[in-house]
Length: 414
Image: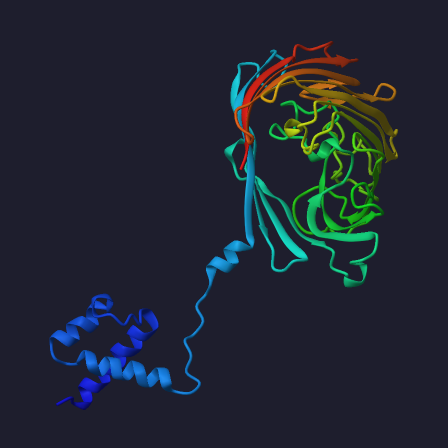
């Protein structure tokens, strides 16, 4: 005879089994259930009858499980890394030679719906967690009335890379054709909002972006000061020929650093109490026998390309003298075979007057870099790169220093 006490145990065990396993076969039942059957506290027929009665009870449905598979299907993880050896002259950054991890990023993208993607990227350069250099919401084609129109709208809000110039999109040892960057290496990331428009033909639209951002350097929230503006217009006149022009105005930075870096210069002119920065740049690229992959440069399958950039910047300072300058580069890549490519870049940054700044640990008025490189594609995602850069300083405080550099790295995307 089944007592009240036993029935309570039966109900407790059944509820646990129902939500944890609910497997009908005896061989697959919970071990506790098998033990209760063995002790004669409950029979298999009683369990089967209770399962049947619960299954026929109106409104009783199995509780939905947390489906991690669905969440994972919308979570995309990718990254890149470069690891290798660097050696420079005695005045350079690696006078005794050094094993380095100059590039290491992991990016997470989560798509809650077909219009929006959250992007979060961790900066792990030099094998150290440095910061989250990206954290923004990327939205595309979210206005239904534009679906059939020759206008495509996109937006970004959060912390993202400034759309200033073209090198900024491949200024790393993995995606760049060479290990080093140009002498100026125009770049920057900031908090704010960016609106993008693609107008006209889908294959070759006119691309326009405009961003309002914080302007002041540092990872984090807006400092509530005057805002910066960054804009770009780009157009592909033909499959091989692409041109873009960019403009940036920092707003009033007061005594703070700028998010837009030119030749590593982000700080105010010496003794300035108030300053702002303006930058403009024009870029062009021509691909010989263009392939499907045009960017990033290291992975292009065009036979060859030639690209150039020229820009000027104006640091308007008070009450001291302004700091102005110009910069540019010419870069080319030739895919000798499917596996081997050769690349070269000549670049410079030149400050007006007698103004000096620190370039590659060298204080000078002008800095020029000539970089020669070879790349070998071990796989579609993994490359072996070697480079030698000749660096020349003009009006250096100690003369032209010995800071030429050799580097070799293995780089990969994943």
